[in-house]
Each structure stands twice: as C-alpha cells, then as structure tokens.
Length: 293
Image (cartoon, rainbow, N blue to C red; front, side):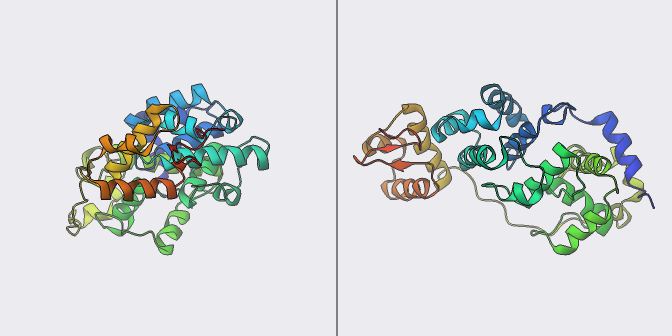
C-alpha cells in the first residue's frame, strides 16, 4: 500500500527544494560524500562555498589522496571540526587503494571508511546510488517524531524502533525512497524546524499527530555551552597558527594564540591525539604532512 505521506512530500519537494550542487542529477558520489562530511554540524550556507572550492581543487578521491593531510586541513580552513578533513583525506586514500578510486556503493564498505557512520553511509548509498535505506538525520527524525508519534522533538538517542519506523515508511523502489528521504530532510530544514515550525506551509499538516495533540512543547533542556573560552576555541586558535605557518613552528609560537598555558597544553595534546598536529623529531609542531623530511 502506498504511504499517504509520499505524494504530498514529493509534490512539495518538487516545488520548494533548494538548488544544492550535491543534489544535481549529474552530481558524483564523491560530491555527495564530501557534502555529507561537511554538513555534519555545519549549516548549508557555510558548506556551499567550501564544497565548491574543495571539488574545484580535488574533483576525485584520487586527487585528494595525492595531497597531504596538511593540504586538506588548510583547505578546510575555518569550517569547524577539522578532524573531518583528516578523515576525509584518509577515506580518499582508502577509496583509491581498496575501491579503484570509486566511492563504494555498499553501506558496509562505506562504514569501513574513517569517520563514516551509519547515517553518512546510508545517505551516500541512497543519494548517490539510489539505494533503499533509511536516512535519519536530525531533520528527518524531528519530522517523523511530530508526524507519527506526536512528539515535539525526537529523543536524544536514536532507537531501534525509530529506525524501524523510518524503514517502514520507505517506498519499495530505491530511487523513490531516496527522493522521499531527501524530501523529508528538506521539509525539516525549511518548514518543520526545531524552534519555529511553519505548519501552515507543511504538506503533511493534515496528517500530523503533533498538531492533532495541540502541538505540545518539548521538555525544557539544558542550554548548550557557549564557544568562547572553551577548549574547542583554544584548539581552533592553535590550529590556525599551524595552518597559516605553512610548515613546522616552535612551540613558543603558540603562546600568543592562547594565554592560559594549562588550557593551551591540554588543547595541544588533544590535537596531537586526534592526528591534527604532529610533534616533529626536533620538537617543533606541524600539521600532518608538513613535517621536515
């Protein structure tokens, strides 16, 4: 039986979808993979120019694999969470060595790549290859929580039951399932938003369990910690020094970037543990691939 949700979402998506390069009919699987990595915890508006610049420089996994991790970190610039750049570089190398330079279509093979979890593997297999997989990002989870279970927000952690529900709503055909998934994702991003849902513009409003219940609010949650003064900000400052230096620097060069010596040492240790910084034999510090030969 055809889901009553499918046609409304398909019609809405055809009229309202954003023109994003990784959704173009001719977009490569590499473009989709790069976009999915970049979109992790980063808004589309910031990803668009970064994605274009990345593909202009490295249009294939092989071209990135031939570069150094330091090149990837510099190109990543201030997009945030720079471990993603190092993992994307490592993934490109494995795609070349294991898969002949082609992004694999198999979910299990995708999940074996560095930094690729269940969501990203399903997204690439679905959006790049038209396979039938439940693609559960934050937006999809929120739409389904409101539409089916009547909850304002999904639970903090994805459950087996939630995945089963998403899979039960997938059309049988892979291409149609992929279009359903991206349509629900877009609906959550543009209409069924977390803070100010525009229910009057929603094609599923007449079927929504949350609206039937009177749109009860979600339980109040603790506010996320700020960015200023955190170890994450400190790591970003230290990494910027190394990114801009173009080569190894002495540890003293990092002192001006962050005044708190204890926090600076802790953040530097975290960068080294994450593979973003290398301590060279002479005691200097460098991005991976910038070490003196």
